[in-house]
Each structure stands twice: as structure tokens, then as C-alpha cells.
Length: 535
Image 1 (cartoon, helix red, strand yellow):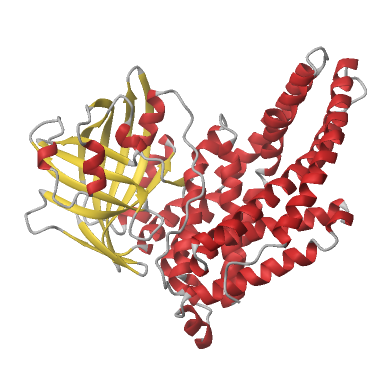
Image 2 (image 1 turned 135 degrees about the horizontal axis):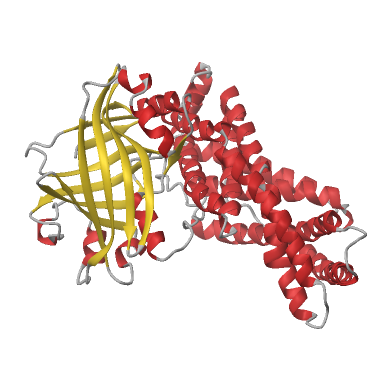
């Protein structure tokens, strides 16, 4: 493959001096999931042909992925693959975590080997020590394979060279198989944003989904017949003293990656965390986009925030029914084993959940949502918030992020305290407003607190904030339960159904008293916290 370095929205890649037999790089590759019926048409569309250097080369690729029976490499964040291309065998180590500061970059190390068996003695010298320690004494065996017919072409854009790969084939894990239909755009040299330019042109022709769900991940999930794995939020891991411009890029990229990673489990729907994490990711995106809008006046930041709000709103009913069926009803039904009607209630709720998931999937697969991911990723790479900025704003963006972060947190903290004044007497609608302000502060602290406070000083504040958010969330779940039960109610329901509803109402009325006492204590603890950042 190729080697590369990146800086502020740009990557430059070139062949290693030894002829390409051994290389290490940050791989900058944009993967697009495409419907099988659209793949051939997109591969020869004008969006491709006008940049194509030639007709390209078509090859059959067979790849075998290796790991231990306990999935030691995968669990540590690595994959090891040997691929046969023509008469060559190439062993590849890939990191599952983001690399190079972008949304789609990741570490990759390659070397030619003699057979389809991995040769660990041939590992490039610059393979990370963490991988070497993980693989030491590991009993490796083939876990899955892919068989792909790939048409590869070079695309020459005015400001970039891209390697296009059009893949049609399947992933095989034991007796299980799953079709593959993908377009991969890998940066050879030039501007990273060019990848998104091409992808958005393709999106004008047919649905293409920006994806971080690799062939290896699909195969590992296939081996265990499990849904795609959900991902919890990750920190932006920004360096000390980072300027505001780099901080915005790092935070947005982290949040967008979190959203893209959780699309597959949300669409699959077998694990409730998929939809939940999509909503969390979108809220985190909105919180940072709002900060950027206020700091720079960027209208695009505000527009992206509105798109994120729409997608999140379409996931709300699915999440509410997940909580109702998975968390609210089970302990109450278990506490009243002789009461009839809970099974019918859950079946009726399940029908509503199915409708809600249909709505969730429709939004995630909508062209509007597909465009959101690609356009926002391009905007992040180009640092589009600078486009509308005056000189004084550009100067601010070059300043250390810590001071601005402190100000943002301070203002949001004061807003929370104001909305929570006379907490015990707040009406439900005011509690809801407080919950939203607390949630926003929580997302902002996830990103901004590491920039302006040491972790030991920040820990008590973060813990108190988290406990308050959880308490307000539980309070809100009880209010939501009343709305959900009201939507299920109908005069022709059998007596047992109505009795189950009555039990839930009574149970939650009791819980509300307990939650109220806990909430008041948590509010007192939080409101008395000393903020860990400098004013």
C-alpha cells in the first residue's frame, strides 16, 4: 500500500523506497455501502468516468483473517489478514481505532509473505508494540474469509489522486455467508476532502452509506450470529495546549465517528443500545456544533445541528419503547407474578416498538441522513467553520482551547443552577427544562473538561453531574410511561390488560416518591460542587 502523513485537512501519500513490499501508513479510506443493484451503475457513472485514469484492473481477491479462539486480537483492537492477489500474498495488520486525527483514518501495516499463512517474523519494524504484545504466544487460526471480485482504478482529481475499489462478493464465517457490495475510495495523495466530494456525487445518483463497519467486523459478527456491536462514546484525546481550531476538529470528528459506528446496530435493531447510542452521538454532535456556531457565527454549524436534531427525533419513539419493554415492565411484572395481563401489554407494546423501529430505520436510510454524514465529514476536514469567520474569530481559533472551554462550561453551569433554583417546588415541565440543560452540560464536560481541568479535580464534579443526569432521566422515564400507556389504552382491551396498566401506574407512583427524595439529594450534592475549571 502507500505511506502517508496528514495535516489540517490534507493527506499526502507515496510509495515506499523498497518498491512497496513493506509499508506502514495511516490508511485514509472512505467505505461506501451500496445496494447490489446500484453497484455496477455507480462504478461506471460519470462521477467516476470523468476522473478515471483508465479502465482499471479486475481481480479476484481472497482474504483470510486470523485470531485466537478467544478473539484476543479483535478484543484488543487489531485485525490480522493475509490476502492473495494474483500470485502475491500480503499480510496486513490494521488498528480498529481512529488514527491521524480524521474520521476515517486508521493505522495499517503491510508486508509481502510467502503463503496464505501469517509470518509474524516478517512484521514491519514499525508495527506498534501494543500489537506485538497482544500477539505474543497467541495461538492463531483462520476465523473468517472474504472472496471479492474487485475492479480497481485510479481517479485523478484536480487536487487529489484516489484509488477506487468496487467490491462484489461475500464474507464467509463457517457455514454462514453474507453478501458484500461496497465502493472504497482510498487517498493516494492530495486533499482528504476529495474523497467526500466523489462520494457526494455518487449519492446524487443512488443511496450510498458512509460506513466504518469493516469486512472483518461483519465477519466476526457473522461467526457468532450476533448483531453489529454498539460503541459507547470515546474521548477526543486532545493534546495539552491544543488550540481551539484543532479542538473543534477533534471533538466533531470523534462524535461523528460515534454516530457512524452505531448506525449498523441501530438499523439491525436486535440490541437496544444501537438506537440509544445513535441518539447520544447526535446529541454530542449538536452540543459541539452549537459551541462552534456561537464561537464563529457559522450558519453551516447551525444547519448541521438542525439535521442532527431531526435524525435524533426520529429515533425517540424506538428508544422510549425499548426502555418501557426492557426496563420498566420486567421488574413490575416479576413483583406481581399472579397478575394477568402483562404478556398482552408487552405484545401490544412490541407492536408499537416495531412501528417505531420502522420509523427509525427509515430516517437513518433516508438520503437526507446519508448526506448528513458525508457532508459533515467533508466540512470537518475542510474546517468549514472558518469560512464565515472574521479576523478576530480566526485569531480566537488560534488561541489555546482551555480558556474558551472554561467560559462555555461556566455559562452552562450557571444556566443549570438558574433552572434548578427552588428545585423542590419545580413543576414537571420545569424539571424537563432542567434535565435538558443538565444533559447539555454533561456532553460539554465530556469534551471540554479535559481541556481545562485536571482529572483528579474534575472527578467529583463529573460524578455528581452524572448522578443528577441519571436521576432526572429516571424521573422523565416515569412521566414518559404515562404517555406510552395512554397510547396503548383502548376500551376493548381485556380486563387483565387494564389491570396490568393500573399496577404499573401504582408502582411508578410509589417509585416517584423514592426518586423525588433521591433527586433532591443529588441536586443538593451537585449544586454545592466547586467547579474544577478556572473562571
